[in-house]
Amino acid sequence: MSDCLFCKIAAGEIPSDKVYEDEVCLAFKDIDPQAPLHFLVVPKTHIGSVAEVSADNSAVVAHMLTVIAKVARELGAESYRVVSNVGEQAGQSVPHLHFHVLSGRDMTWPPG
Ligand code: AMP
Ligand code: ZN
Image (tube, rainbow, N blue to C red; front, side):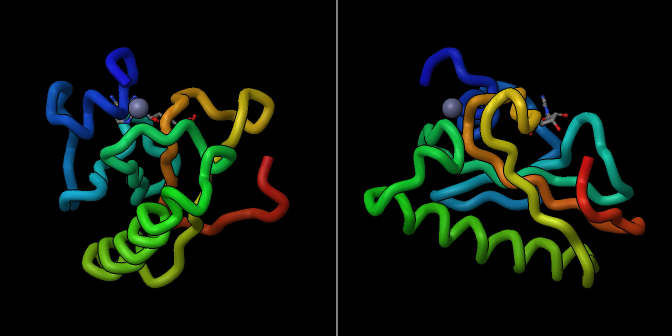
């Protein structure tokens, strides 16, 4: 998608604090971290949100989850929270699928 922030970051057109990259996805530090460790994992192809996950793109999403586990392990996170907001009411501000990975502080439940 030409006018999508995370498509541009995934394509390297907008800089990011990258922590992992392969042919399928990119992981980078959130610009407004909500925990001592807060990174995002985004697919290189445009998927709007979890609501657009289907049989056609589920392999991409499964791969992203393996990347979350690998990068979290490599960054020393043993306990962490994985969040994906879907839609405005849930707090999604960038309409390109992303998993937040938050770690390094106590988390509360239920989330706000
Ligand atoms: P959400 O609000 O769930 O859609 O998450 C979007 C996240 O993207 C927020 O946590 C923002 O802080 C983060 N964000 C927005 N722009 C950038 C950027 N240029 N680089 C890194 N993170 C960003
Ligand atoms: Zn996009």
